[in-house]
Image (cartoon, rainbow, N blue to C red; front, side, top):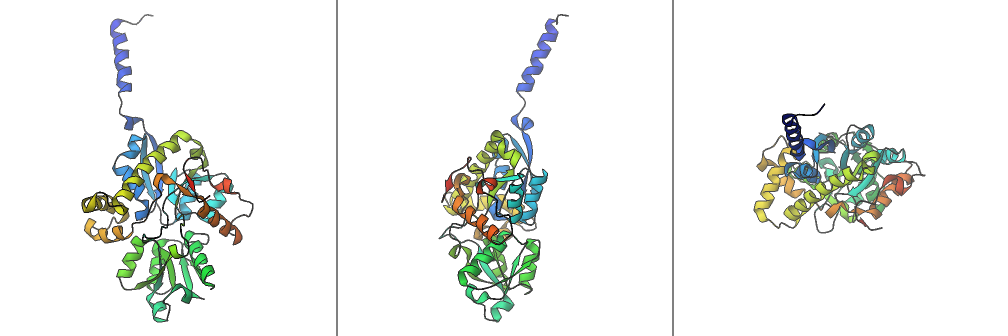
Length: 336
């Protein structure tokens, strides 16, 4: 049967309409794991400034209270990508072929306030005024094999002291324990540290950068299947790299001046501090500024050190190779 002229024109119109459908309607929907930390700023910037949409991605953030559950969620397929610290759980999931690190994010850099080593008021009153005084003290962490565990162990090793590590599962629980003296010490990113110190209940006694210069604090990772999808992961990295450039230029280089800082604070506040006004959140967000690696470059030397430490402590299998954990084909690898 031959189509009539009217039918032909209708079909042509439908085809043209489909081609004209906005890119957002054709975007791939993905879920992204995040913590309500200033260090997760690139995710929030890429959402708010349309960088994900321009890359063909429709992003839904999924919030967590610790790093390890985020890795489990990615392995289970509940989340597609995330940006957080390397944990023993993540390494073990990588060995099973479930997840893969493919980029770097937050880094310790000399000259920029980084993660603070904190002690409780009770510990300070008992004479703990520096990291060397922490011998035999209780160090708070979310879980064994967390970044908090790694940082504490590295501080203890450098100072030649022993620490008692106390797992408390979630960051808010560690904060509560430190405030009440149930744990003596902890290390955390500056936007949280500054608020605790300003309360007068907690005191800063050192910086992690003095013990772990160049520490790759957080990395970008996803399911192994997603990381193997070069188009999808490339789109993700493109959007995140644009957001990282915005963040570093505004908050570290301050290329847009005070107006740019205020605009960035206003963008981040609803994500990082949903229970505060922008002005209430401003001080902590500004204090929390740390370098995020341009182009998501990855400090390979730092990641190797973390892997070797987890293996030396028996927290992950000694047979895990670096290549099981990391795909270095996407971004610049530094410190190799």
